[in-house]
Image (cartoon, rainbow, N blue to C red; front, side):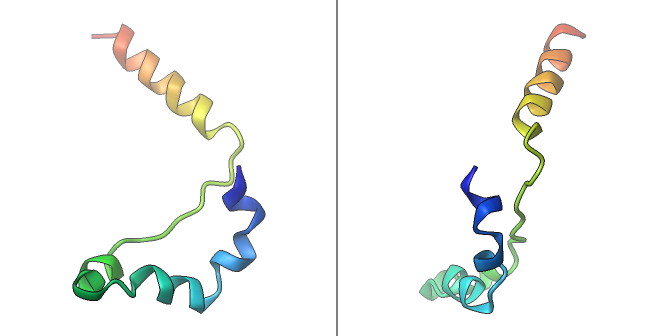
Length: 57
């Protein structure tokens, strides 16, 4: 996906400032951790876990 390709830009202080600079929502957004998933199999692993939980009671 795109986020791993732009990871250096996402690490810049200007990104987190732009993310949190949302007026009355600043306090809320400052408490939200920002993470980038770099594992290319993350979606497949999530789907597998969902499938396992769905099949097994």
